[in-house]
Length: 623
Image (cartoon, rainbow, N blue to C red):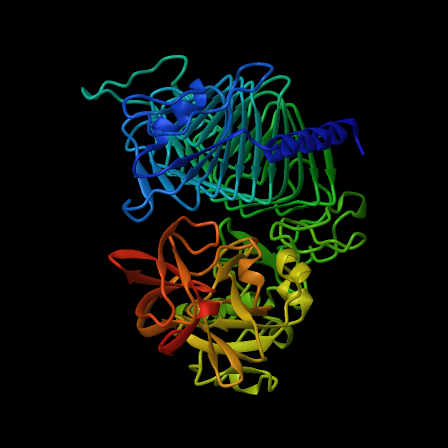
């Protein structure tokens, strides 16, 4: 391991430790406490007037700085979106549990973190704008960490349309930076305003701008895509400092100058990165002017050169146009684009990158969390593995073959004879380049039933390798079935013959696949769920949904009647810790309009609350 790799590994460990530290105060964003006021409370370690409706932030004993968790629980927002009328200023230590919400800048910069620390989890940051740096997020002399979050559709007239980090530590895990822009600002009169900060040559890093001589940028299992810079560095611009990028796809970015995917003027190490279909004046994939080490990575299909400048290290890579003095693999990598968030490209079964990585630089997992073979890993961000995600590969083969047939293509994925990037799946015996006739869902083992599936819907039972999700494997899944489609999907009912259990879905539209809790019902001796999207339906033990590992499904009921078998507490929410709203006598008959795994929501005495299902007799459609 080089000194740089050792240092960046230590930095990653430190950042992860900081992000996981127990925080002192919990502040909920709800109808009475806005996100802006919650952050002000955290910054000032005090309640914010008027109303004092947010919990006070807690001061740390040593340095009097806030260390607080803000959880967004707003009800009544428009499709989970919070619109801003001003920038959210963070000057303390703040973690935001986004709960899947979207923060819309409405033309304002969204976050400005100065001399503080901001961690975002499960949050989307969109439609921010600034005349200076960091349209979505500005971090200055700070720590910034993103987990399972998205920064998209932000722009700036300076550096960093999505994220601008100056003398700051930055960590991105399982996150997306997409469709951000840097552009030269034009005044309302039409005169172009050109200054040192926003001239075309300074419109750097549309996705991410990073500058800090002693700082570290770490990106893992993420996607940097479709960002556009009027200057250089469409996806990422590393001006100074150390950048470590691994298991990441950099695609579809563009720059007027150099480095459509990545522009490096610092010290960068890229391992198992796929850099594809970026555009620039030179070095459309990557352009290096100082110190860049490239390991087990793919550069292909980048317009005006896969690589520009020179590389400090070039080991185990495929560079399609053999630029940057590359004398290794330069054949078509035969990649299949699979829908994902972040998007990723998996090699065809016949791709030259399969098992071709340098074993000294094989990382343990790929972009989706799939295990790599330590002595025979694939080049690029996504590993080709039998039994895992192959149903998506079959779908991609079929889709590409159908498209080629419609367009009169010869089926090799290259209709102009220049050896382009894609493949239509010529290896039909293994890849399934043609759509099978009739559904494959009626030939499953007897303990899995997917009845009346349309002809374009196909199923296959999978083992632990096909499930590939550590949470589900550790808890002990029972059965699992891949459900994939050619074209649009018609929902189907997936049933498992078992005396108990609950069904979850590994959603194929995300990378890594997200666990979706499904409404599960009993039909005879089977546990069933309605599957409305491609993925892997997994039967889990019945108590999995109350393990705290995933959110419980909550769904509406119609035609369900319950009768209490004992005196019960009517709870404000579906947990034993919920506030007691009322006591319901035994033998009370009520209509239930909603349920979770174990709880039913009813109205009693003018109050709406939850009763535990263990103490209810049920009649009607209560599953």
